[in-house]
Amino acid sequence: MSTPKNAVYKWLRVATPAQARELAKAAQTSIAHLRHIAAGRRQVSADMGQRLATASRTLKHRALYLDQQALCRVCRVCPLVESRKTKAA
Picture 1 (cartoon, one colour):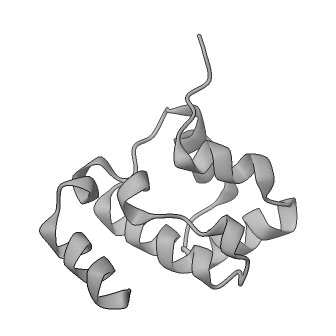
Picture 2 (cartoon, helix red, strand yellow; picture 1 turned 45 degrees about the horizontal axis):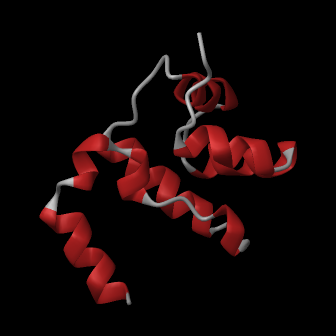
């Protein structure tokens, strides 16, 4: 079985353990849950995708920003997420 290369997997590979703890705390989840997502055992809901994307910006490290549309399959096709991105730009 190959390891899925999703956004959370890639993020955990470059983040420090302290940054991972900080993200989990800010997103109101656990490191274990992030690892389950990274391994493909759990999916990211729209709510969790938004929390992770917002929390990643609190780390103040641009290379560690998570994109909500990359995290959640539902968010990729949602016009609300796209309109929020264009307003922020």
